[in-house]
Image 1 (cartoon, rainbow, N blue to C red):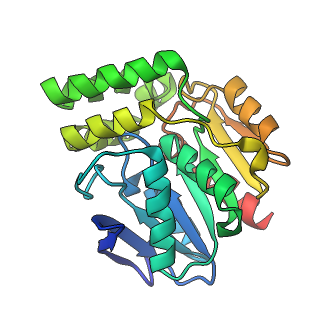
Image 2: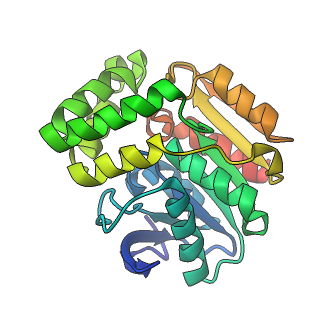
Image 3: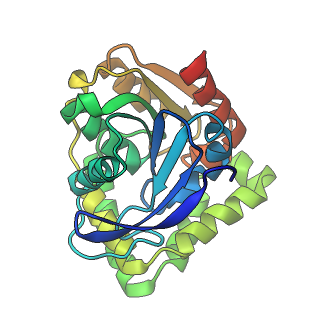
Length: 265
């Protein structure tokens, strides 16, 4: 990924968290993936951002290469991100969050505003609606009883756009692979954490914020994202065409360009 790349595990809040860092910029960008994701969700953006920033991307506890050690909560994820920043001596960072990771970023920005320089929220949600909460709990049971294959195949039909399935098969393959490789118990526990998540006080968020979603995103539909944007004073909303919920991989170049324009435009 370029100069200043490092990967390994760090002890954060008493647990082992896999972390990759890239670049040697004066300012830090901390990237927080969503349910079913890992730090690799942001690989396309890292290659662009690491030219200017120090980019840090962990696998949240229970996802990817970070083992599950206890009960998961979205608030716990936020505490882990803050602890990671403290361990890296980062006084304040630009936060990037995808899906569930966007809730983590919103919690940090609302409760620890001095720690956040800006936010880019991809496929953002404030909190799951009640039907989605039950769906998350049901999916947790399925992961424990049957594993990840059927979940991956179902989400491949509903979480990415029709255009991605038809014309970007490598993206579809990536999404299926990243889901199938999740540890079933870690994924189930993350589903339950998301099901219990509550919205941050959005009116308390003061940092510059860019919200990006796809026109075919059923998890973070444009109308819902516009509502979040209205609650975060001064934020901007961008809608990407022919894009589903896996924004940073379905429209990788468009997301990277939007982020650079946000930071430097």
